[in-house]
Length: 106
Ligand SMILES: Cc1cc2nc3c(=O)[nH]c(=O)nc-3n(C[C@H](O)[C@H](O)[C@H](O)COP(=O)(O)OP(=O)(O)OC[C@H]3O[C@@H](n4cnc5c(N)ncnc54)[C@H](O)[C@@H]3O)c2cc1C
Image (cartoon, rainbow, N blue to C red; front, side, top):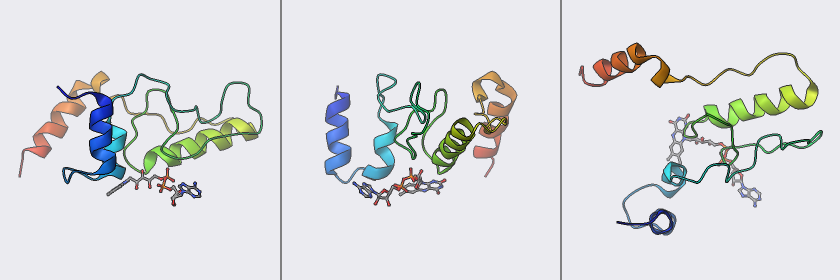
């Protein structure tokens, strides 16, 4: 069995099995290895982009850094409006079933 670091090396160095810049985000981490968008107690600092930690969110598409930027703007400027939430599909089995049906419909 390969370790996470071996898989990371394979993805990053490139062995023809995938797109490094896409697959690196699929490697399991220990949790909280990336900085929070707005670090605890920060008042004028935020990290943006896909290499930040948004609890309970899943990095893959461009929605993630966009949602992170919204979190940063709302927090730092005191905007009293929640950023769009994360869809917890596992809490809505009917959504998962519909998704599977559509995926295998063609
Ligand atoms: C092959 C592929 C296909 C994708 N397809 C989709 C899709 O269909 N739909 C979708 O929603 N998402 C897709 N994504 C994901 C999407 O591209 C990313 O989620 C999004 O671009 C991340 O935005 P970002 O601003 O966090 O990082 P990036 O877009 O990677 O921007 C980071 C920028 O920082 C620059 N940079 C890095 N280091 C430094 C440095 N030291 N100094 C100065 N500049 C630096 C980089 O050059 C880059 O311009 C895809 C990704 C890949 C790799």
